[in-house]
Length: 58
Image 1 (spheres, rainbow, N blue to C red):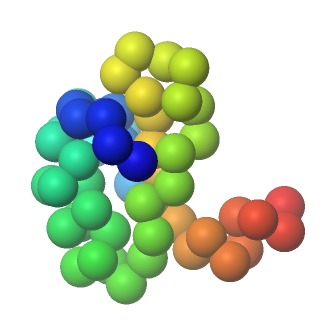
Image 2 (tube, rainbow, N blue to C red):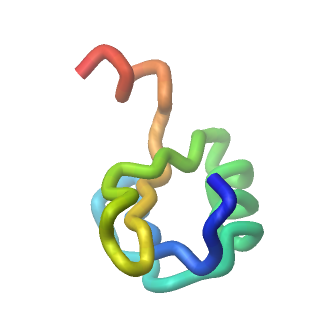
């Protein structure tokens, strides 16, 4: 993911708002999860903090 800023949805579905890519990645790291781009066509792109391993099997 190269675009910044991004709209971020937290692991529990809460809206965290529009953050820089680095801030969003840091929040995901702090939670022990991944930052996954779920709507790249939106402006700004929408990302969710989640376990990517679970996401790819949904």
